[in-house]
Image (cartoon, rainbow, N blue to C red; front, side, top):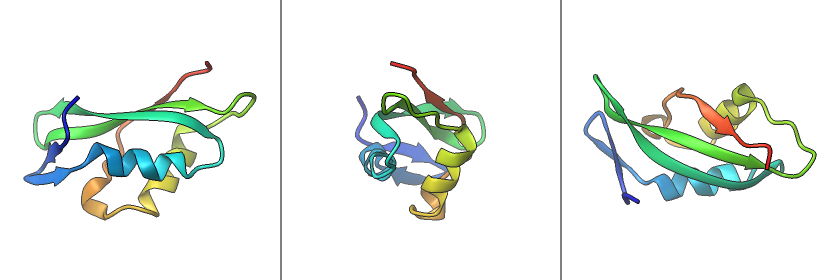
Length: 84
């Protein structure tokens, strides 16, 4: 897995976004990858595994991340959650 996502000329460490998402009480596990994007180069894409019995919304997680990371690191791309 790549160590950096190249977003609009910035180097975004997926591990930093993962660390933020893991602070959310409803998140059991997470992986962040770079998704190719025509204008930005790459954008972060998070795959989230919620805690057992927890319902997480995409909006909730986007807001959680946006409040905790540098604006450069945050792009409102989809956050995917698994039920297992």
